[in-house]
Image (cartoon, rainbow, N blue to C red; front, side, top):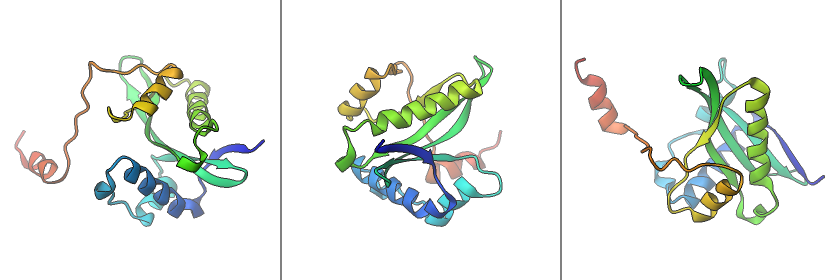
Length: 161
């Protein structure tokens, strides 16, 4: 078989960062990438890793990845996976690699008794939205993603309770 999905290896932090940068470029968000290879290595392979990565290989060549961490549903009382990044290089799209990465994560959920696989998608990314829907994903249109970063995060942290 030409396709293989496997966990990232400690020597591959640079590869993971390269995929992150390629994804950011595709999403027109390159200006937001602050991560360094050392930061990625520590997050994935440090003393107590809370971040996980799978690499998609085509004929032995790494061509995509999925990065995730565990979340928790208080409603179900169980963990789940939050998929932070899913990316397949454009030259290898259409071969089932993205689907294979999602199947890999779905199996992780099922095998561990976790209740959900969840992620966000940019609203302009129609091809990805259609792809996700074809796999059974439900768009959560009644929820709005919230984020506090940078100076706003620092100001919030300084507020008195």
